[in-house]
Structure formats: C-alpha cells, structure tokens
Length: 369
Image (tube, helix red, strand yellow):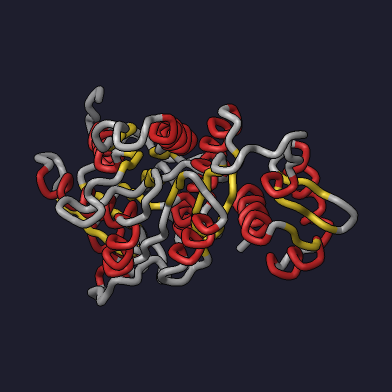
C-alpha cells in the first residue's frame, strides 16, 4: 500500500532530526523507496527550510543552523527532549523553537529513542552540559513508564515545562508546569459533529501507548456512554502495534471494517491520521464508501487533509503548545530564584476541521449542530 507523500516526508524529517544527518541512499533503503523519490522529497523539504541538503547528505535544519557570531553566554541553553519518529510533537518543537530563538536562547535538541527510560540519560547529559531549563515530552508508552519517571523529574533542580503531558493528580510530579491540549474537548468535538449529522452508532479506534492516547480512549468511552443520542458504540486499537498495556479482549483488537459491521456503525473516529487514511482504503476495498456509507473523523490533523478523500479531523494546536511551553519556561528563567509564582497548567482547546469524509446520515434528520 503506497504511503502518503507527507507521511513519507515526516518520516524523513524524523530520521534526520534523530541522527543530525543521513545519506540519501540510506534513507531510500530505510523507507523502501527509490533514491530519486527521496531526493525529490529532500528538495521540497529543503525549499521549505525544514532541513539542509548537501552532496548526497541531508542534515537537520536545527543542527545545521549557524550559530550567531557571539556564542550565547553560559546558562542560556534550553534543552528540548522529544521522542523520535513523532511528527505531532515535532510541530510543537518548531513552535517552541521560534519563541526561544527570538529570545536569544540556544536550543540543544535531544531525541529519545523508542525504549523505556530513554529520556533520563538525555536530561542528565543536558544538565551536565549546563542547560538552564528544559522542555520535555516523554514518550511514556505505559502508565508504569510514566510513574517511573515522576521522582527524578520532580528533583530536576532547574525550570522545566512538560509539553502535551499532564502529571497525574497527587503524584510526585503534580507540581510541575505543563502545557497540554484539552483532548477531552477534542473527543467531544468529534462525537458532537457525528451525532449532529445523524449518526447514532460509532466505533472509536485509538492508540493506547501514550498519555494522549489513553486520555482519548477514556474520553470517548465516557462521552459515548453518557450521550443520550448514541445508541451503540465500541472501542478497539487503531492498529495492532498501537497498544502496550494489554491484555485486550478480542473486540478490542478487532479489524475495524469487521467491527463496524458488528456494531452497525455508520461512523468511526480514529487516532491518528495515518490509521484513519488506511481505514478509508480498507473500506473502499470492501465496497464501503466514505462518506456515503460511513463517515470518518481523524484525530491529530497532521496529514488528514492529504487523502484521496480529505478527512474531517480534530486538530490539536500543536505549534501553539510548543510556543506556550517555551513562553512559560522563559518566564521561569527570568524570575528570581524562589519567586517564579505558582505552578501553571495551561490547557489549549483543539479545533475541528470539517472536510469531505463526513456527511449527514442517509435517511436521518440531522440536527443543525
């Protein structure tokens, strides 16, 4: 199945930002496409200023950026720690970058590999190198991973802000600044949009391997269970590799087209975009037309609008999360020690982008909502 162009380019960016630089031939082998295709993608990404290219080599725009004539004074560095291969959080990173660079702060980017506990050694290295503050987005695939990081994060000793991560109430990390999307409101937007179009049976498919995914799963279940107009609903993993916390029931790992038939659903909400785009293709192979037979809403809106059928999607304010986190960190760094004020939890609302993958249910009188 051919991968969408923007998804492939996001994978190229993730690979470059994780390594700093890579050869075109190595990227082509990794992505299982031709070198010509990679060169074309690289040229477009370089034109957009998202990476730098040389003779056969591609470099990160962040790593390749020239330093100012004068090296920033000691203590002006902000370390940013994000997971590898996470295009959603890379958008937050670019939002933070704009704010920090405008303030004259040097950025030290650290990419955490996909293993439990990968962030701690990166943070320790950043602090040893003299980082004055931290912006953090730990992967936290499981709740155990999350809780295992609480104690050492609470004892950092420098200003730090979590991006798209919300410490659990009463935990050792409860008193840490954070900037997060209100994903519960995002779930509400998706459900109300579909119910307003007359859909009464809905399938929800999310990942289950990040705090965002777990929040969405819980929010969709609570909203659907309490909604007076939702007659039936079911939840399943959006992809076989999307969960780590199992065990799951057979229904919670069911193939989406089969689950839609079982529930009699006329709509589906998926986290995230790629899984939603692939569902549309699977449904087309089964003779199910989107949106005529089934409406589909994606959650993330990174590449949702690029499908053959552009997907209606909930769009978290990814860049704004990074910008708000960086602004909050700068306030902490500028305040006298011990006078930074109360802990802040900033919550930003997502928006719904309505496109061609949803429509009023055939034969139903949809409300104006």
